[in-house]
Structure formats: C-alpha cells, structure tokens
Length: 252
Length: 342
Image (tube, rainbow over the protein chains, first blue to last red):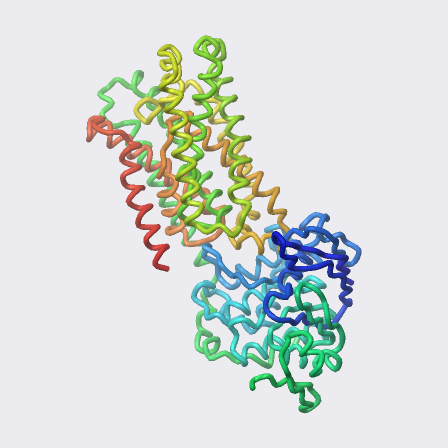
C-alpha cells in the first residue's frame, strides 16, 4: 500500500498540491483526473520523490519513499514521466535494460536478460529491439519507455499522462496492457489521465483533483457522473451507459 | 506469458528483419574503434619521441618522455572531465572549460599569491601550492556549479551564458589582481601560473599523475551510474540514483581533473569539446566504459601529434593551445548553430 500523508507543494504564493492524503491499494488501476493545473502531475512527482515536497510524507509498503535510499525505493516503485529527451545513442533493448539497473547495478544477470526479453515481448517491441530510440515514432518510443518500467518490475507503477501523443490504437493497446499488468501480476498502477472515458473504462478507482485538492474519489460508477464531473471540470457533461461502461460526452 | 494480442503496428511488421542485428556487431565496432585509436596513439607517441633526435638520445629521450607523460596526464584529465560533465549536464556542447572551471582555478591561484605575498609563496613548496589551489577549486567549483545546475528549468543557452559570464568574471578578477600586485609577487605568479604547452610545468607532474589516476579511476568505477544519468535526471532518480549526491561526487572529480590539467598547461578551452564529440561520433554508443577510454585516447594522440608537428614543422611559430582553440572554437560555433536548428 502507498500512503500519501499531507503532501504539500507551493511555488511562491501558489499552492499547487495542498495537503493531499491518500491511500493507494495493493493492486488495481487508479486513475487521477482533473483540469489542467489541478496538481495531478505534481502530486505524482512528489509521491515518487522526483520533486521535493514542501511538507508531508510518502510510504510504500512501509518504506519511507522520500528518505530511504533511492535504490531501495526503485525496487518497489517506478515512475514514468512524459519527458523523453536524451542525447545518448541508445537502442530499444539497451533502454529496456536500464530498467534492470536497480536490481543489477549495471551488470546484467541471466534473470535480467529474461526480464528484458519478456518486457519487450509484452510491449510488442521484440522486432524493434535493436533500433536506436531516436529513429522510432512517438508511439513506439512511448512503448519502449513503458517496457523499461516493466523490466524494472516494481510492485507500484506510476505513469504521468502515458496516453499523450498516442493515437487511439496505441492508447487502447497501452491501457489494455496496464489492465493486464494489474490483473495478471497483481501490480498497482497509478496513472494521470486526461481522457475521462479511458479512466472510466479501465480504472478500479478514480481520483479527481481540482486546485491542488482531491474533490472526488471512488469507483467509476460514482465519479463518472454528471454532477461529479461538473464539480471537477466546471462544465456540463452527459453520461451514458454503453455496453457496461459509463461514457461521458462533452463535445457540445 | 501469452503474446500481446493488441497493438499491431505496421512499422513493427515491416522491420522484422532488423531483429537479426546482433549485439556482437556493435561490440566489434567498439573494438575496431578502440584498437584503431590505440594504434594512432602509439604512432603519435613514437613520432614525438623519435623525430629529429639527431643522435642525442641520452639528452632528448628523458626530456621527451617527461613531456609525453605530461601531455598524457593533461589529455586524459581533459577528456574524462568533459565526458563526465556533458553526461551530468545532458548536453554535448558545454565543457568544464566553457563553464569557467579553468578560469576559476587561475583566479584561486592568483588570490593565493596575492594574499600570501611572494615571501609566503616562496616558503610553501610547489606541491603544497598545487594542493591548496586544487582543494580550493574542488570546494568552490562544486558549490558554485551545484547551485548553477540545481535548477533544471534552465535551458542550454542560459547555461552557456552563465558559463561565459562566470569565466569572464573570474578572468577579470584575476587580471585586476595582476595590476595591483607588486612586481615581485607578479613574477612569482607568472612562474606559478603561466604554464603552456611550450612551457610545461613538470614540477607537479608526479602529484598531478596521482590525482589524475585517482579521479579517472573514480569516474570509471561510476561508469554504469553515468550510463543511467545520460537518460536525464528524472529517469535516473526513478532508476534509483541519488541524483544530488551523485552530482556532487562527479563535480568533485571534474574539479580535481581540471586542476590537474590547468596546473600543467594552463587553460585550454576547446580541447575537451573536440575530443568528447569525436569519441561519441566514432564509438556510437552511450556506454561510458567505451567513451571515457576513446576520448582519452583521442586527446593524448592529438596532443602528442600536434606538439610534434608544431615543434618540427612550424618551428614553434605558434602554440598548441591557440591551434586547439582555433579549431575547437569553430567547431563550438558549428555545434551551437546545429543545436539551434534542431
């Protein structure tokens, strides 16, 4: 279980994340939704020690995420953010092998190679394994970074807007893959999403944020509702039941 | 594990053949490049040692061997410090020299002479002076550049500007002190500082070699961490690297190596830029185990070959430093223009 305890972050007078406390379950898919500037990505960065918090604490399976040795944290919790800039010349396989660094410290064991091969296969990247990542399309590169996180093989996987730059084919494929990770391997996936309908279709739990605070928290049946969404986004939604999913319409 | 049933990607299907590219082909490229560079280095050193000796072996050889040793120390120090710095700062344009590390060393050494006076300096052995300047540089540069690099929102051009301004500021302070110094102290200072390729300061060669070995060894031991750092700060933290502590450690190594090269030959701004980028282009890998070695081989070969040509072909009409700065400066501008376009 991940426990966030009154996490707070301010930039000058603006409080971006305001004393957020949450508990994330041991398994399942948890989506964080909310308008731009609600503090979703900041919350994820704070919870994963990428960004220093002004106040508050985080524990994952009892480990103090913010103060424990970084390497110990990296074996139980992984984070993938959206910035994929590197000057280094790296192939897809080498990138995925980096995911084993917390376990191998740079020297790959046979176990590591197996994990890398499996992560590549899981993300349908085996055929692209020897390609340099700068030659890949945006969707392929995104999958390569996801494969790196899979190879890291942590119980908790945090993803910040993983569907950015993906068309619906690749977005749906990635969401199915995350769902399978939660169902087949009992992992706990936390992701920031902009598309409320992907959140609705794939999540066990949806957390809605606005102005740095959590204002809705529950299963899709509760959060994907007209009044609840209007409270989050300040705009009218129509919610329909379609083939067992709750689908929000907001185009008109 | 069942194969994924989704995400059928036309590009994936079309390039199924590229799967055959095996790891050993990349490895062999690395082997070829490193072997070729070693041969070039051996040839350069041989040329430097034997060109136009004129039968005076017992006079020429020890002197030239000492020069080769000094050039090797300088070359490796510049190469390793640049590669490490570029990985830490996530770019291939900035080097410790461009960011003003050398200028800071000169300023610190000048301040020491200024504060201690010529008598004070005369009482301190050369080795202690070197140790003192180096120690000050390690503390000063680590604190200063950790602060400069700590704000990740600063772009490349801000860093270039900070470096240019810091370098100019340090040099101006140093030349201000030259002006207000009395002539005795100035003479002492020139003796301490104005090392160049034609006037190698070999009194501290032994200790410099020891510092170089320690620094390079420490950098090489951190090669896997450096590999991960090339993915950027956030990914490095996500993969379990304590970024703050690692950055501090690397800055200490960089400062030590800059002190070594600056003490021996004075500031050489663009050598690191040239050898590091040449190494990346030749090896085409992100692995620091390879790039650190390749950049060092290139640097030492370039310095010995350049010095040999300068002494025998150009008859000392010009200094190696100015030639490096001419070539390197043009390359620096070319890199900046290329970066601005992409």
